Amino acid sequence: MQVFPRENKSTKISGDRVSRREFITLLGSTAVAWPMGAAAQQAMPVIGFLNTFSPEVWAPFVAAFRQGLKETGYVEGQNVLIEYRWPQSQVDPLPSLAADLVRRAVTVIVASGGDQFVQAARAATATIPIVGTFGFDPVENDLVASLNRPGGNVTGVSLFSTALVAKRLDLLRELVPNVSIIAFLANPTIPQTVGDRKTFEAAAHTLEQRVLVVTATNEQQCDAAFATLVRQGAGALLIESDAFFDSIQDRLVALAKRHSVPVVCGRREFVKAGGLMSYETSPSEAYRQLGIYTGRILAGEKPAVLPVTQPAKFDLAVNLKTAKALGIAMPPTLLAAADEVIE
Image (cartoon, rainbow, N blue to C red; front, side, top):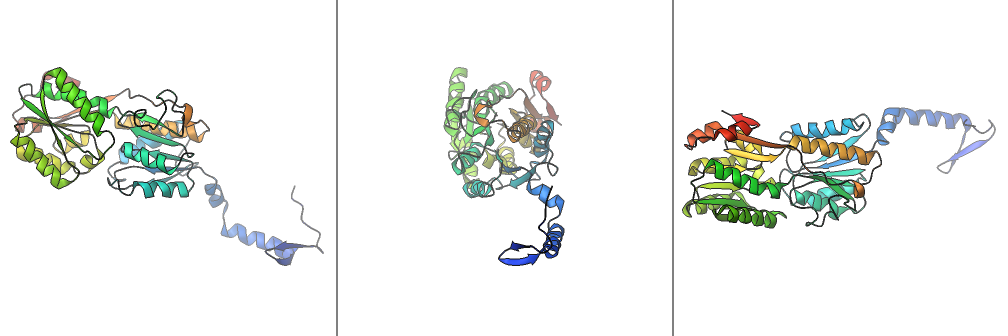
């Protein structure tokens, strides 16, 4: 029970002595200025959500993330707040954006869109829990101690992007078995490129497939890379999973169409834009799992003991219209295995 001083006593506030009646009046006016809803909102945990694309492009996956949160009892705006940061596929702002989330004292950081996003968050804080998506091996990248027991403030979902390079090459070979040279377009500035290239070349060696690696870090270099692979006689192309390449998918699809090059990549958005085929870890399922892990951390679990999860669902998409334009007969086995066929 709250007890006020007697009427003839006074209470000191900010160096001034006021009467009990004035003190009650002051409390009343404060309550009007700071309603109960705002006070409750201030008490909510805050998630810092750092992702490469834009709210419009990533809306389905943000919805999947919110679904995962809901499964653990958290609903945005009701008992949790989310601070979104969208660098629009640019990596230069990452350190400042991650540092800003740390300054705002968010409860947990969700870093998705590439290993460099997790690295930026990890560089900004060693104490705030981080839930991320990993394309490359997070152990080899020194982000976690082990997959089963991460040991620090980082855990998340492995997208197997590097491991899927070999599978994409195998699918491309099935699609165009008579191509003598298959090219690989890589971004040398991202952490997983060394692993991706090693995986690509090892898989090609096993298949006795001649290959060519071309690199690009901007749009002009992409134009040059296509010119090089055509000049070198490459008859098909595998594009590395990378935020920069994703952000210029329309230009890459246009280049593939101009040079009549069959392209396999890591996101179905390429296929919807006119690319030939994609094979990827299901992004919706990955983001739902991100939401679940984030909710578990909000409930008190520690990232140090939450194992890095492995994907259980993969999506294959093919574009029959593009295949027809390239004169490629889609194998029945690929059509049967496809999760989405665009005609």
